[in-house]
Length: 304
Image (cartoon, rainbow, N blue to C red; front, side, top):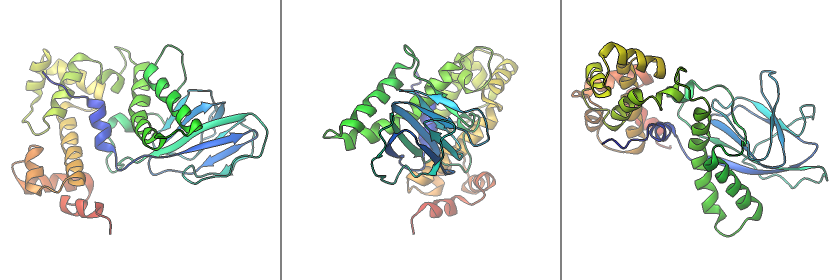
């Protein structure tokens, strides 16, 4: 019996540090311009309303209470009470004075998830520039409950909020992506919404993630899924966007990067854990994917 949450595993591997966020209390008229971010930018409308103004001149997106939006590649964008409101440069991590205006109030939570962009996982790289999850009554109850609790904690500033808020912000990345993928779940649609729900593909992904160092073959994975080799390879590639062994290689290198980042174990041990019997072969494969040797990669992560 496999108990492997592939989506959680992917996001954990891609995180490069804690999320940063800030409470933004504004009153109309207002307009905030957010610069390009090194991570994935997110916004929650806790009270009131907002317009998201995309960077490419695309149509503004109306957002209401409980709405969540994620910009996976952190593109420059803006939020405003109206699409025509003038904009000012804004940094959500800096404390701003309370607004003096008596206009309609909006309470937002704005922040950034630090994600490793050296070799982004397909579940993130295949996302659109803007992931918008509206507050749809009866759907995504867990996400909207979390947003509601965040709004209460930030507005009331009760004892313990400093512990509750970061934990909820961390959970929101999974909750937003899960909700967005569920909204696109369709048996005939390609992409990760299908990959995580197609029984055969999901099972093979679980096996790869649970044991990235195992000597997997397409025949092994196909047999486990109850499909012919050709049928499995086609189904996996259509859903995931690349063939099974290509994905296996990708995940091995992603796992290696996480081990180098989070642990101090010897390179030989890292190589063995992801299925390489030779440290030299591992180092060669890692450098091909990341542009540097694994030892150099690890040193670059250590603060000066």
